[in-house]
Image (cartoon, rainbow, N blue to C red; front, side):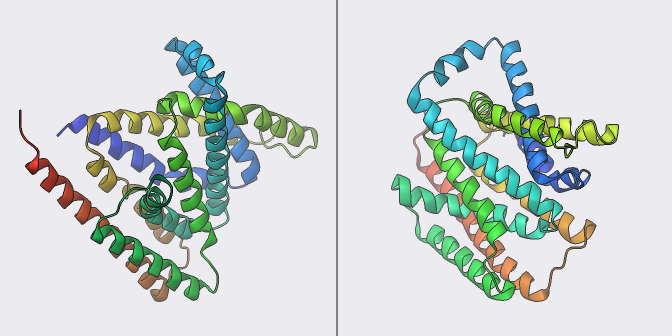
Amino acid sequence: MDRKGIAYAFGAYLIWGMFPIYWKLIKHVPATQLLGHRIVWSFVILALLLLGLRELPELRAAASKRHVLLIYFVGAILVGLNWFLYVWSVNAGYIIEASLGYFINPLLSVLLGVVFLHEHLRLFQWAAVGLAALGVVYLTVVYGRLPWIALGLAFTFGFYSLVKKTAPLAALHGLTLETGILFIPAVFFLIYQDMLGRGAFLRGSTGSDLLMAGAGVVTTVPLLMFASAARRIPLTIIGILQYITPTCQFLIGVLIYREGFSSTQALGFGIVWTALAVFAVEGSAYYRITNRSEPRP
């Protein structure tokens, strides 16, 4: 097993898991402006990286094709919505519900694969999806409303992943194009907010300004670590490690920010966690069986 690949994946998921702490440090900044800064600084860093790698001409050539631009335009809208909803939910005190979205997401992704890509699920995968749906229904009853933050995060990221299935560019190039599509609107929005006297950048502490600009770093670094890990280790290992992120977010919400978490909510989360355990164990067992049955060279 590639230890460096596991370390990269673990590091990426751990950074994503620590995001609530980062965004809470600048919770005084409106979520719309945080989204704008995340887009702007991410694009700047990614564009400079591609410039250093001398791969910007390749990206420009790809972006000149209408079908490629359309795919990444849809991806840009979905990732923008996901980023905004996540930042808003964290700073509005819904870290636990946000973590539920990322617990649900892997199961939703396989279901979207069935619906849109005509993929086939095995019996225990269907059981896991059914259990997760039961958990969501139960939590809807407990909350007295749909857990719309969790579902919004799961669906935006699930459909984003679905779009990326058909995307022709590598992760680095794709995210550069997506943030590039959102770059101009984000810049104009931030300038407009500043003209109205509502802009947060360069109007507060130096620490806040650095954190807003640092949003680009905390976005791009784990992405590059994940891209490197994905090339080195099996998807089954990535599938198990991905639960580090929502687990960290959940624990941060409960232990650090003391968000309410009742025993009835725990039962609903427990149903979802059981579904994930079934999904992970089944996937790991299937991977081992199919690997053993393959002929060796």
